[in-house]
Amino acid sequence: MNTSRSIQQLTLAIAMLTFVAALAAQNPSGQDLPEFVKQGQALMRQGKLDDALALYRQTIQATPDSLPALNLAGSTLDLMGKGAEARKYFAKAIETAANPKDKAAAQRAMAMSYAFEGDCKKTVEYEQQVFNYYVSTNDSYQQGEIADEAARVCIDAGDLDTAYKWYQTGHDTGLQEPNIKPERKDLWEFRWEHAQARIAARRGNDVEAQKHVAAAKAILDKGTNAQQVTFFPYLVGYVAFYRGDLKTALEELQKANQNDPFIQCLIAQSYEKQGDKEKALEFYRKASTAIAHNPNAAYARPFSIKKLAQLS
Image (cartoon, rainbow, N blue to C red; front, top):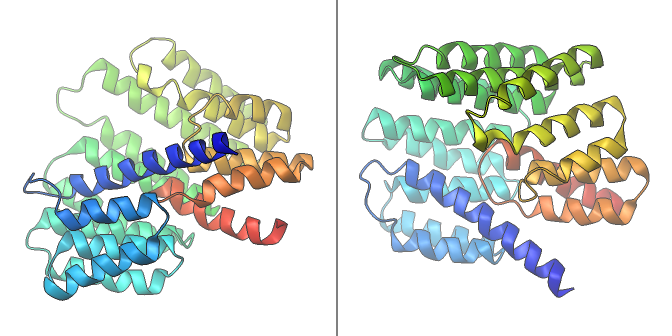
């Protein structure tokens, strides 16, 4: 029991660090995070979303144009499954943003709000605006990042054609970075092969999927992107899952990042398909506690909460 609680606390802590890191990236001044953000972080680590939301709303009441408070309130509401209400805060943040960078951050948060509802079309609508901002700043790398983020939401939503289009856009624009280094080229090539393998797997084309898995492995074997190594067992497990090879899926997914709610959710689905209800519930519970505002949590948290209700 204590081991299980420790794992859950570690998962929450890492997810919260991801969440606050994203907020810090939206802080153009580079100043320390406000005290209410730190307090909210502590509350969310404890799973007290209602209390965190009350804190953010209190801050907004005192400072209506506080972008961190608006974005955090919206993000928390998304985690609570209240997307329509969340988007009122993101709309306010977009409206009151003092500069294009802040507006793009709020638009990106709005895109993720729709991702929590599996809405590829609306996610792309707002990611396109963020993409356009990075076009205006000539930042090819961030253009690629945003395109891949949109694609990730769409593949999880089952819109494979749109996902393919945006992954290709991410690859092509990322490679346009001036004076791009060989390792950065390899990064974009690896991501593109990774994406094509997953899309082929979702389409039931195992031969095509395996071809791209092999290409991704060849790029990794060059040793230029060691930080991407953890994404390879995720890829092999993903492809195996959609091929129906649940034994291989579980073996590989358990080598991937165990704090990633998407991985937890895929492991849970694998156990469920094997008929192991208790293990499925264990991993759905982990995934259901995700508190990041990103594509991984946007898919895993709502899906896992629904599964827990069905299986419990």
